[in-house]
Length: 329
Image (cartoon, rainbow, N blue to C red):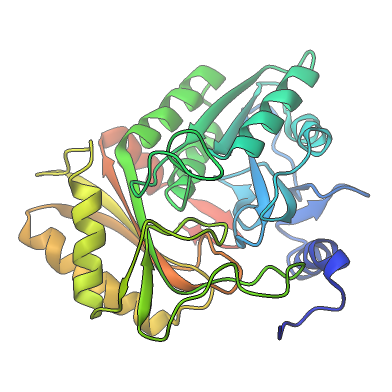
């Protein structure tokens, strides 16, 4: 295993320290805790928090800042944060208007966030659960569909709604609308290696790809011979567009998300095909995001997310944001 680490026991701690050292204008760390909050708390608004295992950077802490998250709770690599950690994030982020928890649909995450909410006593909380992955209905880690890269659209749109001063019920409602209208499918060319394990989570031949991959290094739904980029995009889009969201004639946001080790060159090639296909189908792309937004450590792979927009979601998607990993005017 070749990685720039000192020891596997301290990976998460040193990563968070390095992030805060690099971006003190955006984030700070609660002393002694794996909790990242906005460097300057905005009072009098609904707080939006999220979290999950480390290894998905820049998710989650990279999206803490103006117009997105107020706090993020990273657990150990590919492991849910504890209820105690989440509780401290709720308390630190609360600005008097309640806290929305954006939780990806993994059993540990859902259970621990719900436990933390019960422990929060006099702080009003609400929860939404992202489940945008069209690859599988159930997995080793979930009952129901997994929450994957489409979750970033929830952070962006719910965060903008909260930043604008909406109440907790309205922030939750728009988050649920995003969940109902976003779908994602992923593929991997090489698996990820968890530092503590020291070896890849599964094996892929040089001429193989794994379709329907999750974000925790788990195998996907099928293993096939690698195909040209256009054919891969066509397969992913076919799965997305034949799911339960009717994208025909709509306006959409696109995310071509890298899994950590995919060069930008290849992501742009995938994105070209996505744009070509959607244009042929008469679907208007309002906004495109290409890059590493929700990774799987060092996995070579990518996912495509499509969000069907209405006027409210469109306005909030395009609203200003200022975070480590996503800034727009």
